[in-house]
Length: 547
Image 1 (cartoon, rainbow, N blue to C red):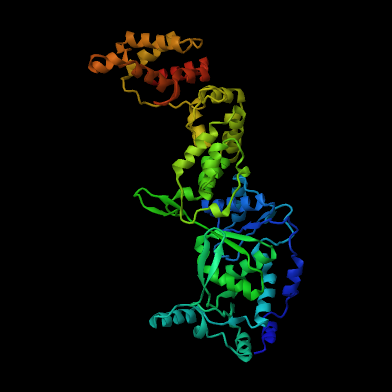
Image 2: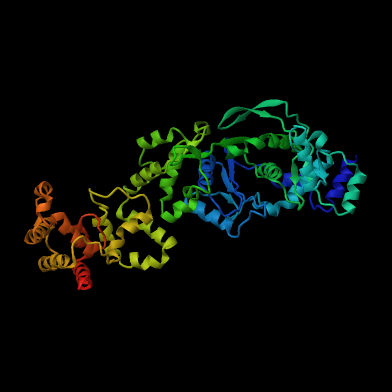
């Protein structure tokens, strides 16, 4: 077989050969020890927690070594591509403050692009031609039907399935046979001609898992699909070499393909880069079973879950760091006010078994983080969230910032010694302060209408906005006593049937009328925030409804 003639036959019109691209993308000019890592998602429209988990580790390793972190879009599978997915990827990582040094949609893009794989087709073809010319790859004209029959035969004989060795029927086609197929317009792929033996195993050092045993690859895997677009295997080897990636960090589900990639790098004459296989994210479900987080079952897997609820991105990153490095939590406890970027991240301190995701722990970290916010920090945080997800309500919340300041200061205790520390995310805060902006009429009084009217009428007659909390409550106790409600809770509990109710029931009537809710923080404080006129207006509105 004249392999060069075969290569020219399969790739007749390439503008450049493989050496051109090796020269076009020279070694990066980086300090000694600098690492180059990449995030390489597929544009499927679904960005999940695992992507952020990996990206945070990539970014830390690259930036703390004065290296490069770049974004490449692996868009070779058109069937899975979703319109607008790349923009979703960019916006997600922007939200979580994961910043790239170069790559897709970056300005400037960088010197190692294009960073979209479908724009790199000619590069892949140049290296495929090199392999064919060296006898290391060949065209395969087997149809899907042929491959199905092959798998069935192998299964019947209890042999390993796949396209390899004696089962690789196109491996030894003559040049004349190839020409005939091409003249007939037969569809074909390009396969690597493996020289491996699956019985042979080697020790490979993984940057996270340490030394692992890897069997040699013996499969003639597809390098270029029928449409000329590369498989992940081929594109990975070429792109990460030409872009001078030093460490490929990816999920441990890719361990099964490691033998293919090791052989492919050797076959192409590329220096072997380092691999770091991260563990999967697990959870304990309601049955007590530990399992992998699922796109179908677990909404918390999607990054949109955290964005739409308004989790602070830094709090999410703090939590993920506790999963990424086992010593981070101890470091953070000692350095609670130090930026997480100051932490010395290490691949050898990453877990080797499933990382257990705990939403409750994330919420606790988020609560603690938000509880340190000043008034201005909280307003900036809420402003960004409202602008992004509740633009129509922006004027409602920020049209009168003096009122918002009053709510956040008196209602949440910001800038005060006694402050609320029970908020996990922005939408929860907005829901909590909604009563200051919307008055809902609810009919949840335990008493009959006349009783409610009597209490509210008496309350309005005695209400003075300038009363302090003690004076206000003393007036409420008098209203309770005048209407046969017990003001001494101990006495009431001893003989509940001897009274209409207690002071708590009277407070509830006023609370429902003024706020539209049965359970709220301190009622006097709420009315101080609402102001005299709004408090009176709301109660009068309820009285009118009761008529």
